[in-house]
Every structure is written in C-alpha cells, then in structure tokens.
Amino acid sequence: MAIVNTLEKCLASPYLFEDPAAPGRASALLERAGDRLAAAADLQAAGQGDPADVVYLAYEAMFCCIRALVYAKGYRENGLRCLMLAVEGLYVRPGELDAALVRSFELAQRIKLSAAEAVAAAGALVNRTRELLQRQGL
Image (cartoon, rainbow, N blue to C red; front, side, top):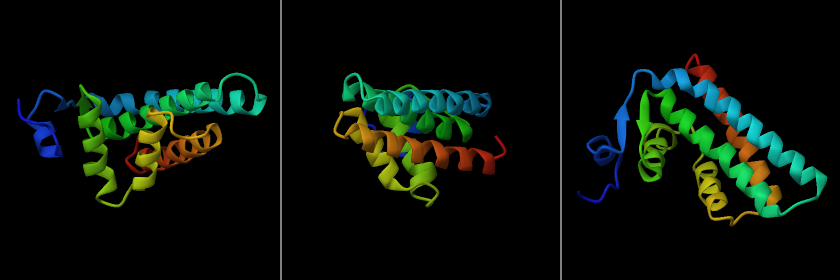
C-alpha cells in the first residue's frame, strides 16, 4: 500500500472511512475526555504520583477529543496517522481548531510536556471540542 500522508489517501485506504453512526458516538467520547481531564487535574493538584501519569491522562483526554471531532464529521479511523490527518483537514485547515492544540496532543503523546502544560492543553482542547460539537448540534 502507498504511504498514507494526505486526507484523500486516508479516505482511499482502510484506515479512515465514513460511518453514519459515528456522530452519535461523539458525545460519549467528549464525556470520557472530561473524565480523563478531571483525573489528570486531580492528580496534579494532589502533587502526588508520577507527573508522567498526569501527562498520560491529559493525553487520553486529548485523544478522545480528537476522535470525537472526527466522529462528529461522520468518519471513523483505524489508525492514529489518519486520525491526525482527518482532524487537520476537517478542522485545522478550515480555521476551526488551533494547530497548537494538535501539536500539544502530539507532544503529550511523547511525554514532552510538563504535567501543568498537559493539563492546560487538554483543558483547552476539551473546551474547544465542546464548542465545536455544540455548533454541529451534537
């Protein structure tokens, strides 16, 4: 298979596909994102545990948000690369989502953010996702 490096190639691959039921799953993903964000914030506020755990929980919150956004547009993914290309093509390029939030997601995935930065970025992405889903009637 060819290298999948554009939204169009993702759509032609088995890694991103239309699913009419996907928008109905976006709200549950956003709820899970809120739960993960709350857990990250609580752990950070307690000052106990490993900061990497806080970053990981924040990453999970951001992952749920990115997935919810793509699902809201009626797509499902079978790979992180196509999920990232989809959110870029569907939200970042049209100016609906700040690319810095997606970059923070990528940094959190590699545990390259501090706990405070990860919680702040996850909070911003959860809030923006909530706004975008409300705008879409979800």
